[in-house]
Length: 257
Ligand code: NDP
Ligand code: 8X3
Image 1 (cartoon, rainbow, N blue to C red):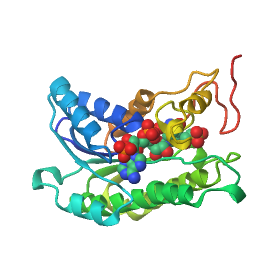
Image 2 (spheres, helix red, strand yellow):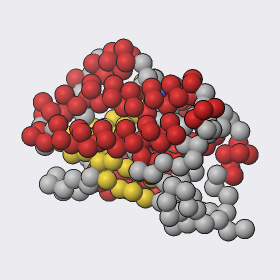
Image 3 (cartoon, protein in one colour):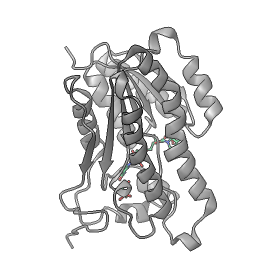
Image 4 (tube, rainbow, N blue to C red):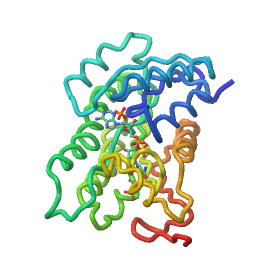
């Protein structure tokens, strides 16, 4: 018996990093999964792997969370048996660029704001009413330590994660009468595709972000998300702030030579 048998979990950004690790961890606990992201071939591959390894049901579709019409269309046309979503993991997100604000790239700002804030809102707006109707549900948002502490050159990315933190609090307040749980997950350095995306595919530069430390992994974060999702129904984990042992704050990291 899995801890999440008969539960439906919707994950955005399931093709890599934390989202993919969540898909695997939730499947191991017997959850039925709705997986979404932009890279359909990766979703297809992951879905096949999960079905054969864990024997759970998987429904997947291409979804760009920045496209509000697409989000509305895809979620409203979910088959009836997939509409009773128990857990939403708002994971899709990215950082783009690393520069002083006066030298910032406006397209990068828009990509971060559109994905990390507006995308999360679009998806939540479609799924939350379904949860409220059933008076049951758990929204898990991927914030960041960057949503608590700004770091140099992080400006707009940090601002988007401060917004996620605020939205987690706001959703908790606005759904208080509806038995909805809301958890904000705020990790420090996790080695995924995150830095490669931030540095436009520059693998060498991305690798340097984690030089001399043992960074967190997507699986570490999935493990904590699963923990929050499997508490007794009276327990709401408001937030988990987690860093590698070698990281004390957004700006202080101890690197071995
Ligand atoms: P990855 O780059 O490894 O994964 C990001 C995922 O988001 C991918 O599956 C990507 O899929 C998806 N994604 C990006 N843009 C969109 C979009 N417009 N629509 C739908 N899906 C999208 O990064 P992480 O796993 O590290 O990041 C996951 C979340 O965790 C993000 O919100 C990030 O800000 C947060 N986080 C990460 C930390 C880290 O150090 N890595 C620390 C703290 C928080 P696809 O390209 O197929 O669409
Ligand atoms: C990602 C963590 O510190 O690289 O949110 O911005 S950090």
